[in-house]
Amino acid sequence: MRIPRHLAIIMDGNGRWARQKSQPRVFGHRQGVETVRRVVEECSRLEVEYLTLYAFSYENWGRPDEEISALMELLTAYLKKELETMLSNSIRFNVIGDIERLPTSVRRMLTDTIKRTERNSGMTLTLALSYGSRDEITRAMRKIARRVADGEISADAITESMIDEHLDTAMLPEPDLLIRTSGEMRISNFLLWQMAYTELYFTHTLWPDFDHQHLHDAFRAFGRRRRRFGLTDEQRSGDFDE
Ligand code: FPP
Image (cartoon, rainbow, N blue to C red):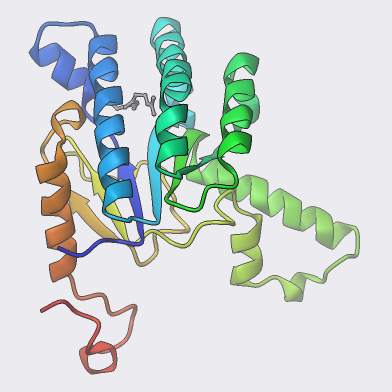
């Protein structure tokens, strides 16, 4: 099994898991939070350096109001309850996305958690909230365009690394592995720029059922991948587990 330095996860299938049990969708989200706890602790134990979870997408704002409120409540309760775990495991908490759109109480809670964990030196846990990759790239482009318009930089000075630095993920390395649960094989507007060379892993397991064993399976599959980054096998030899 190979541990990715940066693991990104699209946590999908809470609604279907609840439906299978003839329960409301929020029942699935509640169980989904339990999976978040499990996965965060296991990744921290395995010394994953960066874990990024897609918790609420820009498009999720279109869901029914009561589901949005339930997700916000779950998020607040999660942050309140998990602060202790973050502190005892030295986890640094972080957020990406258009957080201005989140309710003030949630924003306050997020800022507080970021502040209280900022000196931790273990795994960086990033929640993508109100996050859409195209929205993030658009916001970054606006910032760069303003610098050009102000005469601070010339258009020719724009480089890939400058774009990196203007994204919400400026402080994160690129993901090495993406896991998406529930059998859907899409990226759904998640980290589009950052995942140019990320290994993709799809599993049919629904998020509430995703356990340590499923996580280890994904890491084993990752260990068998040949990451060439556009180069030849010979140039990259020595980089593989086998
Ligand atoms: C996808 O399931 C999941 C979400 C839209 C939200 C993920 C949220 C959680 C796991 C809980 C809150 C998170 C934290 C960190 C406290 P879906 O509803 O799209 O499932 P479906 O595709 O089966 O309908």
